[in-house]
Image (tube, rainbow, N blue to C red; front, side, top):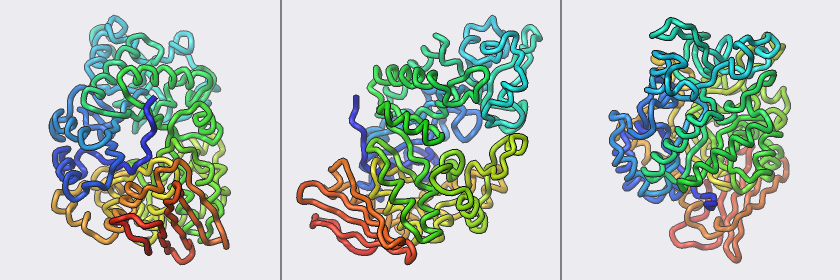
Length: 490
């Protein structure tokens, strides 16, 4: 098993820096040289029919708009590369699903796709079973289509979509030998490009069973993760499950030794800044395992439910969402909440993290806490560049998440990389990458005086410490001497 990489990692779309992977490579070799020793997580660069890359039609080519396969190989040669595999679904425009849409069950690919009749006889779903399913698409998680050659009606499972009978992401049946063969082929392609790790996107939705939420269903989910990990391992790939879930499921991931995301930190950090209090933040950080990937902002929104449930009181989650709305956020709601009697229905908050944190000082403090925390700090490009709420992109796309998905041309990126807010983060990344104290596997975290947080790393005689005052929104770094690194205010 590969050792978990705990060095700082950049996460970006393939066209966020100058429009192509080649431009990204240039900046990583020049202005950002040495910033991300843990490499890059490149969001999907493959031909895709929707969801900004998250509905790939194939995994053995790069969308020509982003560059070439050689550009991807070059990116992998610079530092470790993480790529996504949408293990739960495949594009409705893929060759495999188009063949099914033409020939129906006579298609050689038919068994790849999940149909309701695989779980319920004749596909007839009791109302109580339908009500139990965790929805990510209005109405129900299904798509009806007419087979072109025969006119027969078919229904397939489609977890994600924007309207009731629209989806570009068709769910896969992980138990089908055809699907498992396809996974093997996809993993082989990404390993051939030089990828070191794959993120298993939306993996929790693969676990489907009648009468359940069909999300993170046990014991099926553990069989799925075991199977995917084994397949990836044959190609020399580490796996990173992408799962938003309650604390019981997250603890079960840790107990089984999987690496995972910490989707609590983005919100609990903002909660600490809002209240000027360190207790919850310190308690959360002290519970994190070493094999964790931490984030502040991502290509999706700041997680609220289910991730933060239990980490902060209900009334404080409401207050946090109110503050973020005042700072320009838009809210991603839980589907079907009203019918289920849920009064507080915020799933995620879409906002640039600089605006969420109340400005440059807040962002710098949040990044310092992330960088001094356990695991691997993953830095989203727009937060790195000090990007603000992109309301124009939301208006143009009709997609709330576009508020934090701005593309920068090369000149804009270079100017942003030289800005004070980015240079403050650069210093933090260099300390994390270079100071020998961080070669230890454990950090010491403590809260004191209500508004202060101390985070310290020690490795033999080497040490590095962050002291934060949340009320003052200020922090200082002290350290044992190391050439090229300076202590002082964050």
